[in-house]
Length: 123
Image (cartoon, rainbow, N blue to C red; front, side, top):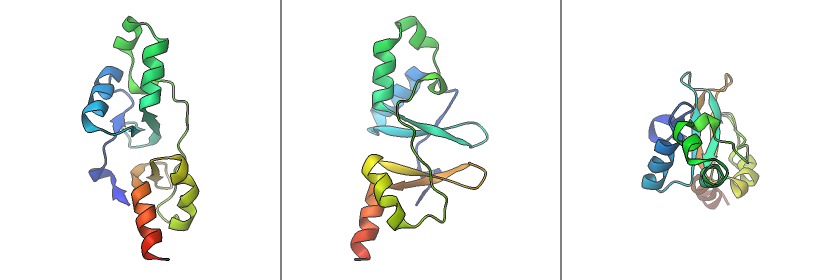
């Protein structure tokens, strides 16, 4: 697992335009979204931003926050004690799997690469 301190994430009140710019610079195609208490709220991806830009008027986009951008897909989370074998289905649909504690606090991600590497080493 990559801990939260090593992961890019966005706060729900981050301006959407700034988040889109940051995402483009980072090269990531999806980023977790949290609130200021650390609660995982979902993942925003390039498609969400594209739909926002296509469906909203430019003046609406200027005032939107990440939390207001409609998301088409709800990424599922796992707990810290999830088994790698159980993550295979999730990483076929998601670039990464968010990890949250029992209170829903975002603590990190498990990437597709992490799962594949694990499976390779534990054949």
